[in-house]
Length: 114
Image 1: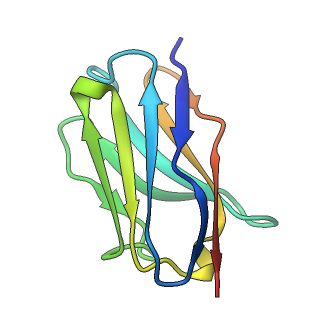
Image 2 (image 1 turned 120 degrees about the horizontal axis):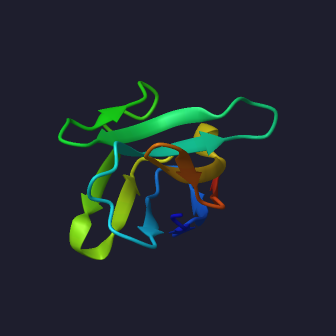
């Protein structure tokens, strides 16, 4: 069992930045991938960024060039640096760790005002 805790969400004006963190309760080494998703009201959950084990980070087209996902294995933490935020980035952001099953955090709200 793995517990994931997200933090760093909040309110920001358009053009601003936020950095989200997701800390795992155990080592992330050996897992298949870690990812960030987001879900806005009335919309489907959307994959934002993903780091596969031993692979390159991938991003949704809507965030390429603005968001950067990194991981710190020593801290069991992944980050999502979000720059040039837009109102359409407003959503609950969730991190997930893919092993034989998928583990999800509780999410953190990001609100971007115009």
